[in-house]
Length: 145
Image (cartoon, rainbow, N blue to C red; front, side, top):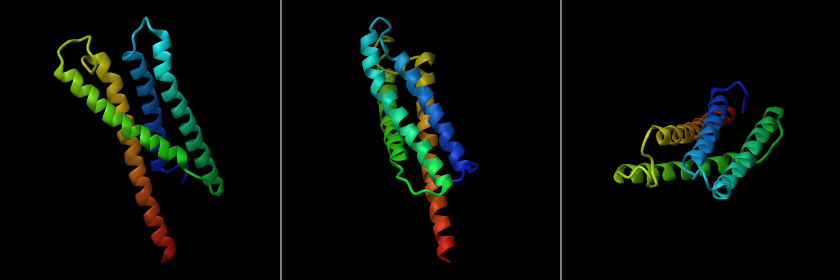
């Protein structure tokens, strides 16, 4: 994958937006006075994002140098993106069906911002994956002809 390609830039932007939204989500939907609970909920997500992100950038660097490598980081980020879309859909539904502002769900602007960021990052990531796959198919057809 070329560093200057639009797909790579889209994936990097999507990953950054996804990380910002995930961190903001963790802060918004966690009780202020329960630091251990917040830490327990945020740590696994942040560690997975760090692990998958480092592998994504490492695999990209190896691709640029022409070294074959696995792409499990992209798969992991894709799985997190799909889980995030489902979780945000559930949180939005819960928030809109329960008028109590203290209940679980997306209720006001401070809830909508991180939910929108994670959804935007997730959909951009998935769009980059689709565009990357289509680009790979076109390139392989051109090579075989």
